[in-house]
Image (cartoon, rainbow, N blue to C red; front, top):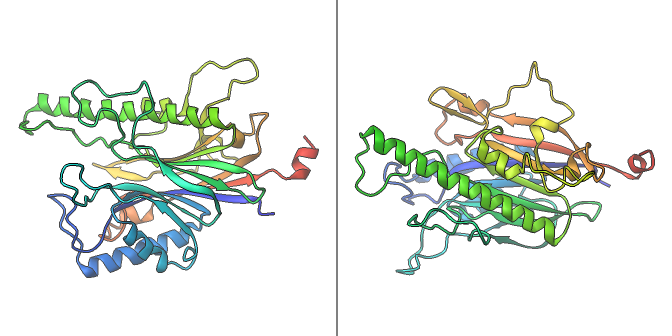
Length: 331
């Protein structure tokens, strides 16, 4: 039985068909640009060689299928995801960044997306799309080699880009501060909604969970801590129940003197804002552990090369080891 399982998260950075207009300040990809991006993304996927990959900023599933066709390791993999829904007012197709998932392991059932916040979670009154994620999380039930099901959730939380209101003067420092606050409030609310969603999944079936995503915040940020459920009081003997853990913090191979992990460079600051979180079933400190995190690798050399076809995010690769019968017999 395969005992090593690899999970990865990969923000592919505005993957779309050539000629598609995504943003006012971003020119569409030319056919040559598109070909270069497809080839680079396929090569990076092959380098990751993960069993399950969470993707962000997928504007076109057709483009992602093109990437898989140019890879050597994922041509037969399952691609799960949804193109953006048509505009509710005009019915026209829309180009919006979506999350998706690639799996070389079978799925127990078709993937589902969660556009709406769980009950009891909402942005302040008057906010646009106050009851839903800007980018709907994707949930897939992945079947491990031992026939155990893992709930995998792919996420992309709100960025730190200022959320200006219509008519705001971008040069006004007060309006700039308020726009940053609106972004923080949305990201924080999405974090609460994601925490509620993870709790809902656990209440339906207690089984391992993995979150793959671009959190747009560091592991020690309040928003990430909300998702992980850090600080929540548990019953005696169940203190780890419901919590999620940053693989970087619980990996067996962590070397604090040599470890260099970052997934984004912004204004000269090196940050890790892409994370792989696991539930207590992959934390050896839990009596319910069925595996452990061997190590975490960051693929980020391309960030210093500034290649136009490359992503502006590093990728995070996590190697997990499933415990076998021998492990449990000696426990």
